[in-house]
Image (cartoon, rainbow, N blue to C red):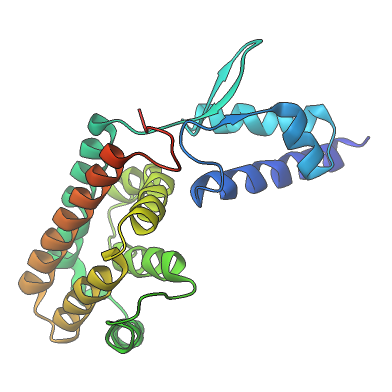
Length: 222
């Protein structure tokens, strides 16, 4: 097999497994089998093992020789550190660099949030949530802070999915909180936008901690 083909298969395996972890199809603390992953992908051992190695380095998998592979879970400390970074980056970006945002995009987000404020279900909710926050952070010109934020982005999405699945009211509350942030941006009221973001992150952290305490998919997140 050519080196290029092996590299391509490794990338495909990495993307496949990471997506499953990110969307909690592979739940926190779930035991995975290398053989099952190979069968799901239809790939040989080498590209799957290399993908597992990359995901282990990123902290998304834990590999125990001769015992198995476990999807990394969350601790209270993990959640606290993730939201500490978010509080440092997201409100700061709005307060100091909100004027760099594309208001046409923000207006589109605002309309979606208001139109679905009472929705009990919304297809693509987690993608929408991620796009909104990513759009806001994209205004940040400081590459060092951007890199710091990007390091936790997958974990942010995992917590969103977990909280949304475990706490029924979270979708509606998030739509309302996002609408407040977007509307403040449209008014160019960056202090209000920043404070609305702080409040949103507070509620999001509460939901994440509540999810941790409830457990996820009948498995405690430890």
